[in-house]
Amino acid sequence: MCVAVEGPIGVGKTTLTRLLAERLDALEMLEVVEENPFLHHFYQDIRGYAFQTQIFFFLSRYRQQGTIKAERDGGRSVISDYMFAKDRLFARMNLDQHELDLYERLYGLIAPMTVRPDLVIYLTADLDTLLRRITRRDRPFERAIEPVYLQRLREEYDRFFAEYDETALLAVDTDEVDIFTKGDLRAIVRCVDEAGRR
Image (cartoon, rainbow, N blue to C red; front, side, top):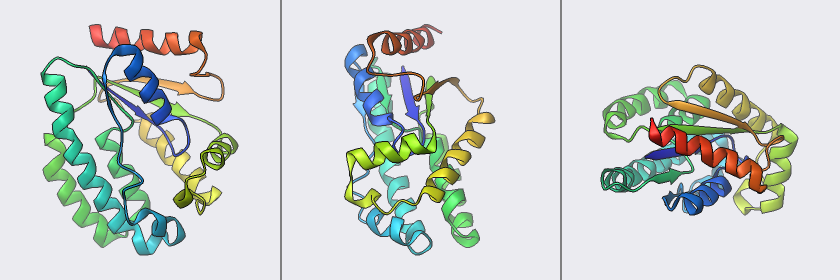
């Protein structure tokens, strides 16, 4: 079984991924973020560094797909803090038309070879909550994130998942659900178990 945890920056994807992987004895697959050499520049100059940042993430996400597929085919569950399909969401937000045309050609070649999750857990939160969580974890490259960019990202995620019907989807409002509370986490684990039995 493969589960992907998704949502905007600061919503708690990696935290929930780690908790679920531990609970379910699954492989934890975390997105390569801090190793992206363009990310620090990206938040200071989105237009100038969008393509380089996007392609780095695209290639690193694709490289991880081989591990995800091998583990899943070998009978082990995988919990990932991203889904490959969301790569397009950022591309459409940040690339100019020529860059996007090139990106879409690459995506069309690579996407059919990637693993489709059995369940996507979509985490949401208010803008103020996201900003507070980003400030609390204090990654240097995230200090330049503008609230207007984060709000736009929230809206793009909502649009994306409003139309999403490729797999089972569980939406979790993290302003209401506390993943550190045993009862709330247990309820999410139950949903994952049910998805695995389908």
